[in-house]
Length: 321
Image 1 (cartoon, helix red, strand yellow):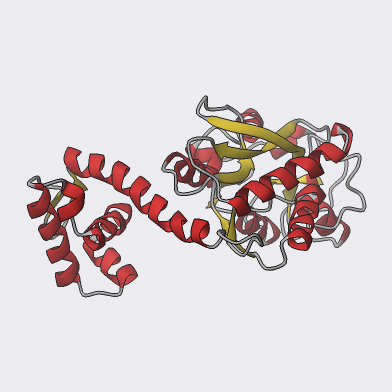
Image 2 (image 1 turned 90 degrees about the horizontal axis):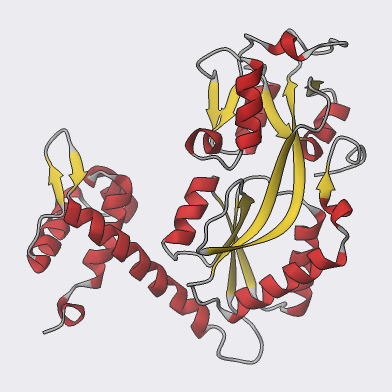
């Protein structure tokens, strides 16, 4: 008899949570079940499949090669099941499904706001949910077919994804009010050497923020980084608090500079470009709700000349994020 007729799908979902957390205790908390029950579920799945899925002891937990293979397939299966509800909500003429928007932190641009407004006017009964991930997490979700599209920076492009350019932003270095360089004029880039700095986790894990990584290495900040932030909001918090210097998109920092919470540092030229894309996995079937939003997004982008989709130090004086 085929495995699909015998396997307990709840066990498969439990295994995905266990694998993602690399811990039976953490998985039990997320699932809201006792650890013995979660451990028994893993054992039942191993018995059904006839292979060990994880090596576990009181101090270690590690997926076996079979476990890693099952995880890759199970994530895709669970993602497909989760998407069924979206398709079922779109059997009527009026779109009433949920639009899941997944972005890197602070993907701030009027063109995205215009697309959301346009979409809501066209489909007032559709709902939206927003998830923020770092770049590598977002790309992994696309690869595992959990999501159809996402919005994030990309320095290199994968052949199996489609990349639609939304906007270009430039980053600059900033410090907070309690930093020794705050308020000082006439600074040179050499004046930053040896100071503590804060890095983006995305820059540590991937090359999507390569321009920031390259210039940070050229400056010669103190090692190791005084902080590593998973989101732009957390990096900004550390910079404002005076922990160190950090790179922030100029349009995001503009208000804080006006309010005296951030001080711009050299180099004062636009030398850290970040290209932001609407990235889609063409192997994932989009829901009607998703397809409508993607069409609207492309329409809104195409309304604007490229020059109006570039945020540099010269054109963000009045920008309000």
